[in-house]
Amino acid sequence: MTGHDVHVVRNEGSIDLVTVVVSLVPAGFDRRIDADATVAGMERAFERVTEHWSPKVIGRVNDQYLKVAKVQGEFVWHQHDDEDELFLVVCGSFRVEFRDRVVALSAGEFVIVPRGIEHRTVADDEVHVLIFEPAATRNTGNVEHATLTAPIGDRV
Ligand code: NI
Figure 1 (tube, rainbow, N blue to C red):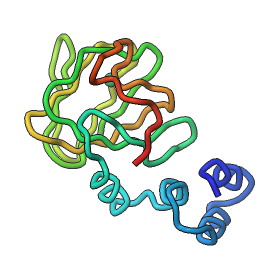
Figure 2: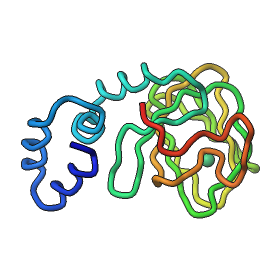
Figure 3: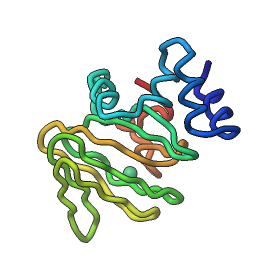
């Protein structure tokens, strides 16, 4: 069963129905991202992330993707013309820099970057971040970067 199949079931029935159906399918990636979006699941997901600045999809909520990323250092300045993006810090300290201010975040804090606003993310030490944004959002937004632009839709 694929994640898409699970979404179809969800549209037709209740949450209880989804839970029952999902519990019947073999353990696998799509079952995990749709049915096991727990703190424990996130920890396992972060364990599988091996590169910095390369968000990996762990779930989908309607048209939004839930992604995990490990980041360290300075990202490239960019903006997303049509998408807001949410960064929630799971572990570590993190900054989202705008041209006119800096937002410093600790674990448990989040910021929503409005569409069209130039920004870059910075972490002095490695930080674990949960990102919530539309499926098609490119991590470097309007910028094509040789090493920092990550594939869209990669999963852990
Ligand atoms: Ni961005």
